[in-house]
Image (tube, rainbow, N blue to C red; front, side):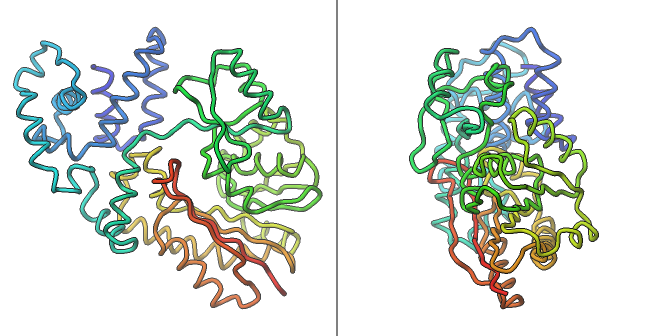
Length: 388
């Protein structure tokens, strides 16, 4: 329990991110077995996910021992007979939970400002459906690397290693883990037969519809998950130019590409000279822009507590800047996909509409929403064509 408490202190007092905190914690405690690690991870993530409710019931947002005790009570796990928990009354906690049922922002643990912002844009009912959906644990989804294997082969080979999977309807390369387990140590992962990538995220590369032999630019490549998927869809033929403003992300992408057997990718640090160098050369351009991350709260519950209204406004300004400057990379007749992992129309449709109003040589072909209530992370994507 001490490890859980220390993790929460780092997350809420020092503003560190949950996944990184747990990664370091597990390295420090290599003696923990899979069952211990699973318990700790679930306790920490559930504490972050439901922090407002837990801290309300604990009557403190800094007594992390008490907060953990409240969570144990809600989970119906018997409290250890420790002094830290001696004032906790499970019956009182159950009664309070019942009394708070009408307080949506408390019971679902969202800051008032964030809940109001989302309700204003989505409508109260739609927002509450998505908000509840994002308080469930994210599924572990694999993307089959078709450069090295097939879905059928991977299912069989994973099963030999004791890893059972399910196919995902309408997601060609996705497999769902039946049971959450550490798969990064698996030989099949180390040899690049699959990646970890949410099903919704996988849809973006497919939505761009890249063709073998094309020049495709992934202009906000980040760690490269979508770049690697694009390479597989293109059968390693043609060229992908992966760009980002962070050199370390591109270095990580190179390592992942080697593992995945990807050979048609070049990385470039993006700046004004890069834009000029590749101007009007791309057949297809992916702009998976920075966003609020509101669609992936299920996976990153920290977002609830680290996001600010000012941060959202800065992000929207950055999105418009990227939309105004980066399409120069696309040749006439080419395809542009704008995508986010946000639920907010102001980061999605509105941005596309404003872009089209300024750039009349582009037209919207189609768009797609993937909502957390559908089972995976939330994404928006719009496909545009450059006519002249």
